[in-house]
Image 1 (cartoon, rainbow, N blue to C red):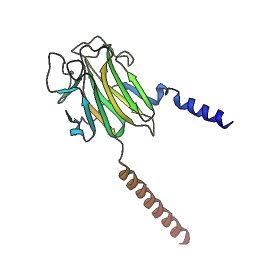
Image 2: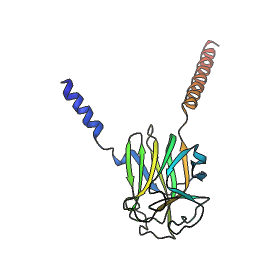
Image 3: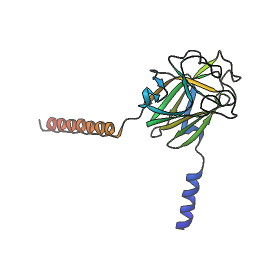
Image 4: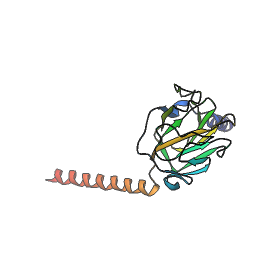
Length: 201
């Protein structure tokens, strides 16, 4: 019986996550983070591995329409794959996806699994690499789930994927959680003391 339970638990862990674990959509936005070769906000929000950060159009990568500041490109001539690693994580990510085409792939790894997106799966109105088109997208996790990495690549090693205008909601550091919980405890104790004194009065 114990063995059967263990097998059931193992198979449940191996099952792929449902697509509802991570909500995605068109639109989004927020305060735009600085993008450098170190990552977002100099690597303090997310570190960058691979890809290339540009400030203007290149022969192999076009700046997404509406970009503020730099943009990130990943492709055969731009570092092949770009990986943003969020420290410690985020429950919301938004960015501008430039000249999307059917080969573009975004893989978001969360605390619950990995999710792959493309311009086609997200129902972009343009998916043929139109240089004059860019789509703002957002990704939101369920409570308790956090985005750990964002991987930008192409299904075929052709052209580049270009993204910019990153915005996130950072996950509080453990010390911040401790301070928040401590604050709630103090407020709760103060409210309880006040109720007690009112009852005696």
